Image (cartoon, rainbow, N blue to C red; front, side, top):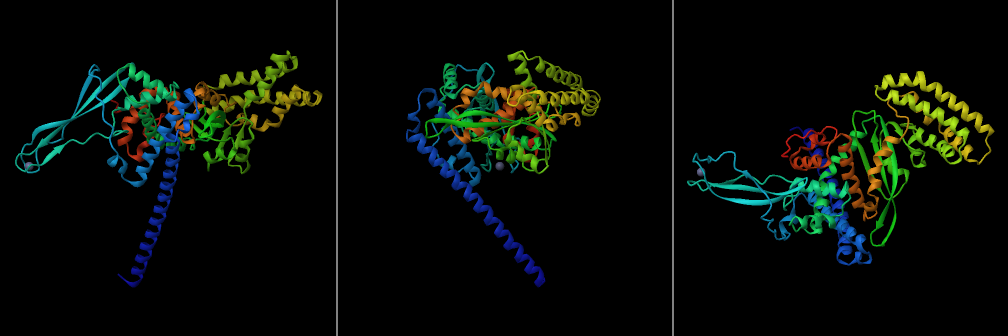
Length: 504
Ligand SMILES: [Zn+2]
């Protein structure tokens, strides 16, 4: 090694050490943060904080706490690089599963039972672990039997490894976990009600355990939702919308307004996906953070929070024609306004072209729009301008017309881009499932709980958009996640998923 080479080598070592210590500091910072969060949640859990709440609010708050605590523990384990907690933690006593349930034996034997020394090994016993499984309408028990094999000559002992699972210790199969998640997040059945349902089947699983499962699943599914978001940001046209939900402020015993932000691909996009984000506010910074670095056309309503996105020109605004049309519809429906009826005819003509255009590709669609919609839109613009001059300021008619005129460029974006939809209805229809469960969202209970719900809902709703049964999808994904390599996680996304390797 020359002196120069030695110097270069020394410099690279110093660099490496510096990088490692930065990594370690970041890791330690994250560990401190999580430890602090855990201490607060434990104080709430054991300090009787939820006692101030009544009835269902209390039980829902408690189940969020249980899930949050379990989630933090899993995240801490991952940061520490070893499941230290699991080794030292006292394992709760396993209660036997009801003998009345049907049982299915699954055997795990070593691939080869010939010892390294050349001798044939002998089976001397087995370990049995029972897991509770659920397929729609039926509970059953999986008996996992792992034979123990020994070599008589050199006393080597071998056994097939315990198969990797989302929850290693504990009784749930991926099927039962999928059922708990779908019940909670798609059917909005709180865990205490699921506890009762399990009890009726003869299985006593405390709601706190169910809460832990939900928390752990949330952490395990997180990389998948992150991959879904990344896929979405590769698309050039997206919808965005935000809807308020009431959130129970922990420790304060009262609710405040939080928001579910929804982002989706369009109905014209071959990739069907929606991603929800839970945020404590409606500030535009949430959308900006989600769409960080994205270039494309964003279809959204006229909420001012989005405007900052359009300033630097990376994101182009497309408006919602349905919103514009609605103002005239209200005038027509409530006041029998004949004038509004005239405008509605033109809106209807635009939608007639859209119906014709929807089954074609983007190129054909934009040709149709240029040859037919353009003329209608120009006529509508003339009509709006003319009648704005006649309308008195401050009247409902003036307001309806102003709404359209002020946003005309954004409203007519679809005329020049076949990939852009005429309105934001597609995403607004995707929000409805949340609205249905709004009473449950009321008790999101914590930012973490709201984010977890948004993440699981993203997968469930995207699975539905792609024609999958959410239970079948989640079951298979939870089975495969523990062994799926990180660089192939995209295969588990709803638009790419095929039920390969499913045991159902
Ligand atoms: Zn041997």
